[in-house]
Length: 410
Length: 90
Image (cartoon, rainbow over all chains, first blue to last red; front, top):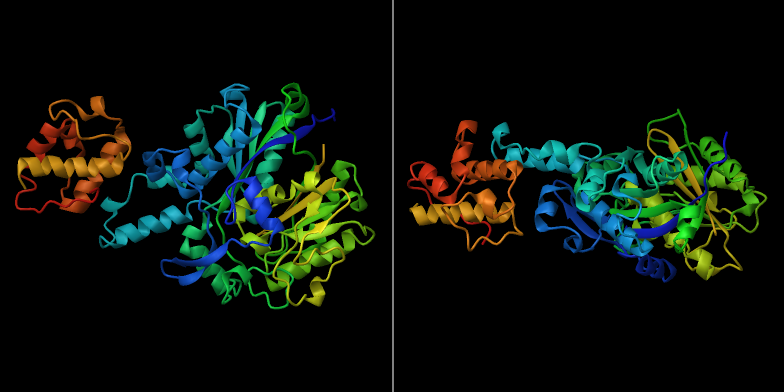
């Protein structure tokens, strides 16, 4: 196979429950600030969630917001902010040579629930069902909203990958650049999942919805008292370019995407499987031409569920058995589970460690579960490393999808 | 509702559908689409809001009656007779 073009990250646009730009987000990860808060949603009542507080009108007219979806607003905000961060105009490479790849865990539940609720007020007379329902719920909707807002004509679509989707968006962007299909790509993921009661109700029915008197303590991967997932909204899109293009314009380079892998458990609808997670990590390392010992930071997927965290720790223990320098952290402990955005947001939160050498911890571990006691786990307080050169970020999802992305300092 | 109230009702609906538009200076005799940014989906929204607020069932062949504020008033006068003005965009 011909040598693949090298692809680098040159811009980051994000909104998370604890920050609407990388600097704020990173600052809060290093100072232990959670973004989880009390939340209430139709039919479920009081619960907890990670809620974003960005100003959608910064990049959208009020009519666009009304007509589109929350996922679309998040995607537009992230896309615009990512371009600004990269110091790029959307026209830089030609609007037909710019692709948009947005990972989604799900899309359409929010809009469908809203319509059903609306017609329920009219005795289910479907003449009150909105003509906006189909354009809002088609699976390319968030990516399509970005193209409408920015006037982009390149290939733009969403990648459905359960909670691995944020990594899928990034991987697709890398691949499209390597194929020469586009010259600039936005890749990452978004989540509007806190606006569908169904996701809360389903996690609750599964016994996997977090509860805690203090919302900021609810997301606690690896802690013995963890009791489930905090559902969050959010988004993160990266600007990606081929290395030579980025260098030619003197771009700031956050890092190079040197490895990635996606595989499938083929074992269970819901339960994760350490063996395939292990294979996924090893496949990504192989593609990067690296050994486990080359990895400085592993951002875990761990969602604060009983079984999921243990399975992941089993995989980590095996892969990094001979890697004493590898540190392991978790970002969901701060922001909850941002679903389709998780992979991209969590990678973004770690990227500044190339510059500052700091590794954010996993917070809320008061009583470490012995089954989650993995060497290198950064507990509750950040640590300073001599140098961080390589980050491995993991995202897994239902139906047994696993993904791993490796980014190296450039 | 009076003719003025009907025009107010339609403008109120438009203000929720096209919240970025300035509606104060609209010429009631001129086509709405020539004065503000409205597309076919917006007109479907107007039809939907008339249905929700005033139970006006507007068949597709009548959509052209929404062309101007004047034509809206002509069309809606007999259909909104005796109804109260309902403002949401205020």
